[in-house]
Length: 194
Image 1 (cartoon, rainbow, N blue to C red):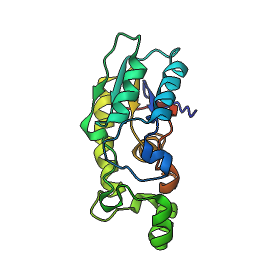
Image 2: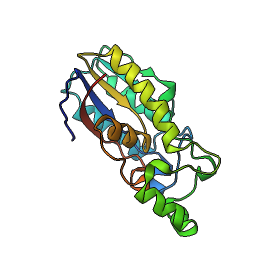
Image 3: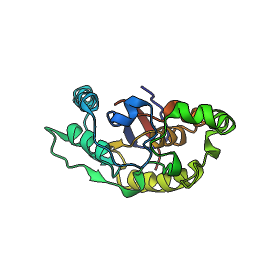
């Protein structure tokens, strides 16, 4: 769990959805719309239990089935409805959709190393650059934060976009692109400014 205090008044519970079959296989799902697998459903239920003691004023999620299913678990028994934010969609991996991360490491070693050393410069062939995704998602995050001052909000966003959001909100460098590619139902707490 990460907890940073700033001058702001919004508390963000950043949630990675439970796993899909692609996550378990080490495949890049990017913006593909995939449901939770059985293990992912269990992870989403575990998240709901872990977060049951935290008051949530709102839950916003990415427009993909795994994020929607995870958000639905989070609001169970609460008097809130999850809301879709289109700009929370994951990075478009273009021609990398469905590829094994190991396959990219083997077949494109220079590009793979670049994702380790300078993840903000990654741009999949025919896809969206990490830099462009950061601009898109952070505009949406700031809109949500502005509406949610003094509230506790959950943002259900798949990786690698969730790790990009965490890095931006915590004013840190983005971690190794390849190590944050797959979801496994985790969360972190961040004090964020609007």
